[in-house]
Image (cartoon, rainbow, N blue to C red; front, side, top):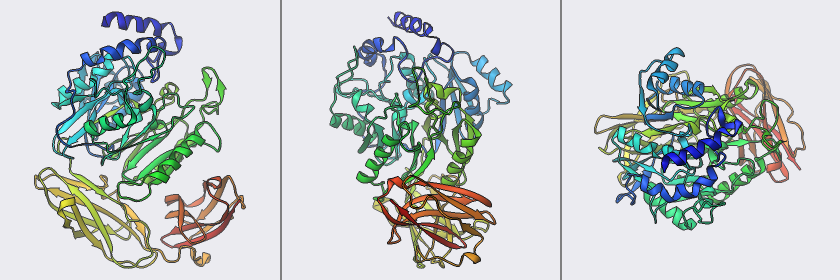
Length: 593
């Protein structure tokens, strides 16, 4: 039956020139929809995973946690895969699912990539889209035993759907599978993100593919939203499953094409020009999240925006017709591999800004751009073709980064620190100049029931920037820092006075030229001129001095630079654009109409 199934599939594929060269797309290929019904009926019999929920509490790993392996499938887009291996193997083991290990090794070696930290696993597969069908890292009791959870893949690709079993067997990891009623769940990895503490994000695709209504002859599992939520809670510990409306031009409806969690409280969001492509729906979705949910710390999510650039023909996905529409270029489809972030790039004009945004948002990380012009035509990039396996003994550190404050009193750093063996000690490191040595303060376990360790950074004068990180050691001897890239990486906050009080601009090394247009109701430009490189923040404040939006937070280069915000997002009225650096602050009034 399987051979007949695959033969029909490939006859359909090779009749379509578009997919003949680079294999199956992320979406349905020709003839695949006709096979989906039979595939769903036979999927549960093919799995050897445990099909009942774990009998212990579980927690799904976040992408920024420590990983032991990164998994890819060696089929199409070999040049991109080789670049992933080149950089990822410096951080962890890279497992390559392949059919011809000698060919893979030769290709890597010919491109200057040796086999150190590379494992070749010979298994059957169908496609390159590892993110969608790869297993998910889950821990028992938050961080005790490592297990893997596998969903029913939402494509009729039986070999892909069995890859998690091969990886789990290789690593000796127990595998749970949502393949049998009443726990049968169709899901796809590109449409799921976890904050590591029980919150998951997805588009409503997960509901569409599990509501039993089907599409053509496809009859998906029949589950209410409450039942979908329950399956995700029991198998993956997702207590809060945030689902957003699907986008009209992202035909696969995967959230990793336009957003990414950078940490427990920061969303990186793709942004189109006003009214373009999926821009209005993305913005509506983000505003829905901001209006109805807070981070695990109970505070509003921080949002960092990155451009969704046009393709090489200067077209967006809503432009053109038929097969000739704009490619879905995205910078959010990146992958975090311990201390390295691999980012898709396309064209230098747009890439430079995107890479800078990553570097500023995640200090200390090795940010590497990989050309994805070839693969993006198939509606995917680096995140779509990789999947991580977490470490066996995570040392979990979580902290709500301190925000800018006018206070000159001590600043308490409360941190969640936990390891299966217990914590023997923790240290807070801080400095007020990014070129000096960190000072250390021993942390105290202030709330054992909630695994909270605390220490105070001494009060500082107005205008001071504070850089800090936390390091902990488990009773087993394992050590970990957060941010993981410390001491090169850090959290940062500033001590400020009256947020709308101008200082003498003649005493500062930078100037803020006239913001334009003013009055504003659309894209608004903030020109900055600086005599030297500065670390600064550009914010939009209301008339009471409250921070409405952070427009830029990070390095301001020497010379002329420009920053932008979309005034149409805000109510009409009087606002202030504030530029703050360690040298002082500049403020300019802006009218939004």
